[in-house]
Length: 242
Ligand code: F6R
Image (cartoon, rainbow, N blue to C red; front, top):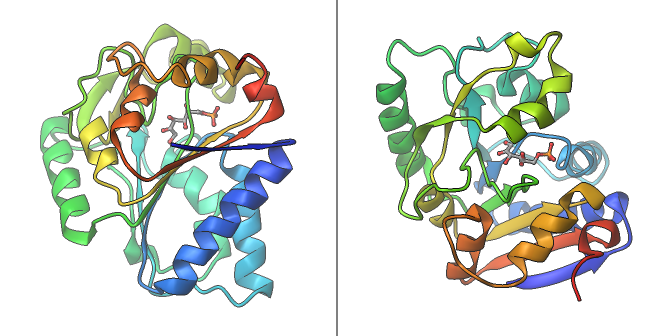
């Protein structure tokens, strides 16, 4: 794992954007694996800027997202469909039919998982996967205890994840209890992975990751089994690393 320590959130976002744009320049049909949450918003702002002013086109790029809440329709204000549309897809020239996110209200969640895994196999391999990290080390919605050989699956969200994501919802009862997420094995099939971490709240997770101990207790630790991972971390998130 290559570790790049930068000053702050803006520098992390710019550094990540540079790598994504390089990938899209060298392969105009690149398949990008994308994440939601607060971490990649700055990256996405940079990509929008690059699309508008630096001639980087996404017209033949495909995007597969990591996860979606179960129970939220595509047009729900807190769905990851809405997040991606608002923060990236509607502002670049990617074709909607080239963007893939699990369906949050499937007739059968199990079938949706099988179908989504098949979609990733069909459009993949993911050339560049973007990841954030949860305060408990989760990647995607793969919470501690998720096996390293997991593929797309239904996840019961932990209390800590529901609390972190809760403020976006009007009432606690509205915070989804389950999600569909790419599994750890699905994520590790990506050819290149960029893990982003910013802010003090991620310091414990980064400290744990950089012990290099691979364990189910820390889902992000499985990234040590992949040979092309770059962690871009800001000083606040790196502060507990000796
Ligand atoms: C989002 C995702 C999650 C987030 C993680 C960090 O698609 O898969 O693993 O990356 O929860 O979230 P933020 O960036 O909001 O701190």
